[in-house]
Image: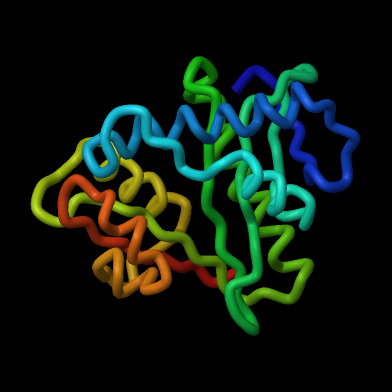
Length: 181
């Protein structure tokens, strides 16, 4: 790992509109690539206005290398003693530099500072067939100390998202993971 990766909270920094749009673009590109079998080509994980809302809450951390934003993660409260993270994205051209690991470590530190004892995450995957990137994610999160606790259908996990569930191309499940902090 030759490059020094700096992690900051987006809320605490003075980001330009271009930098915020770049962070959003990293996340959109990551999900468009990794969830094409689930949602189809051109999938947009969330609209920009929703991303701006979570950014304003101070829940987005971002990674920089030499001033270039190269990754983001959403870290948020998910219960009394639990935080969760999602929207993890890193610049694909910087793969192998440890950006994802650093972002997760920063999210875990952030959660511990807020009193969390556990960190959780979820991976959406097709129910009836394997997708290599989802298998790789499972293996990678396991190496980071996360263990799969349960799997449940999209609507079991997100009953309020009935309309979104109708857009699924294939039956899909959330694999839920946790780690004691």
